[in-house]
Length: 205
Image (cartoon, rainbow, N blue to C red):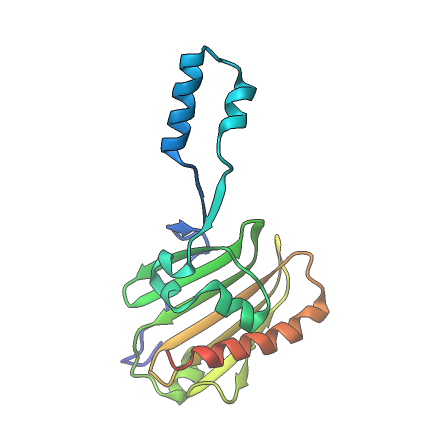
C-alpha cells in the first residue's frame, strides 16, 4: 500500500479522447464560386467540376494542440531525440495526472506515451520501493530516481520500453515506447538509449 503523500498513477488507455493530427482544408469560397460558374454555364459533368477544384492542403496540427501532457512535446523535438516522426496526438487528464500519446497516421504502432503526476511528496526511496516494477532495473543519472522496464512483444504490438522517474521538480513521469509487431529484437537496446536521452531532456520540465 503506497505511503501517505504518494498518489498512485491511474491507468490510462491509448485510445484517449481529443485526437489531433492532420486537417484537410479546402477553400470554401473558391469551391462555391466554381460551382456557381458551372451552374450558369449549364455544365453538370463531374469531371469538369473536379478539375476546377483547388488541390487539398494538409495542415499538421502541433502536438501541444491536444492539451494535457502533450503541451510538453512537439513532433520535431521527439524526432530529434529518438528518430521517429509522429504526426497525431491525443491527451487525457485524470485528477492530477495528465497523459499524452503520439503515433503516426499509418497505424497504432509505433507510439510513444507520456504520463505526468503534477507533484508528489515521495522521495527516491519511496519511489523505488513503491513505483518501480519488480522486473525493472534502476537507472542512474535521471532525476532523483529512475527505472527502465522492457516487456516482450504481445498481441498486435512489439516490445515495450518503459522509463519512469522522480523528476527534480518532484513530479512522477513515465515514458513508454511501443514497437510495431514487425520490430526486430535488436532494435530494443538502441531505442532504450534514445528514450533515456529523451527522459533526461524532459527532467527539467
